[in-house]
Image 1: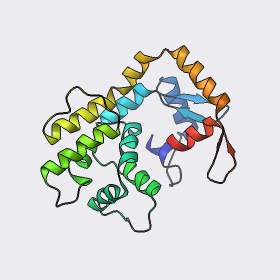
Image 2: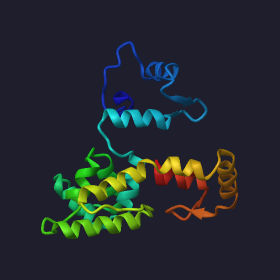
Image 3: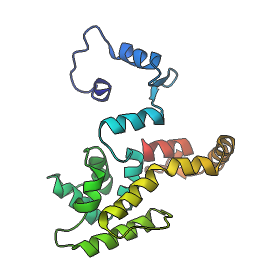
Image 4: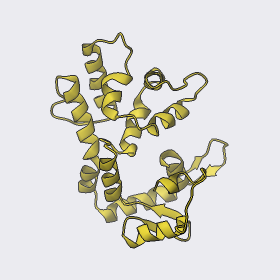
Length: 204
């Protein structure tokens, strides 16, 4: 998988070409390949296992949700904590850098996003607001910083289960088809854009 991710870097494939590696992964049932679009599709279950192997407490798609509701100053605090550049960096670039830096989400929420002068109470209040910003519906949000972080992580990690319970696969497809037909959008250049293009841009 490292070879696939870093195709821009010289690698010694030996007898195993990238195509052969992909085919072996497909034969094992780890990935699916769409030959028409040359896309590699990885099931959520496999992503979950890979996240566990890497010690990730939260999938990237959920981490992205958190990063998008943080302020620019908080994003800069996170980058500063790891010696990353913040001057002249756009909000989108900040989010992308953090997302791909392998930063532990628990460290980020307990320490990195805050100013050094922020006391424990101020940090707990910020997490309380973050729970509200993420539309997390929890009976108890916890009292300590760690308890509130646990609420955020657990809620986001179980979000997919709640979504599937709320709507059937057929209902989801019908809803998506209706959105595709009625969506009228434009991209950053003002050109017409389909819903699929917008989703791909936002979440790729």
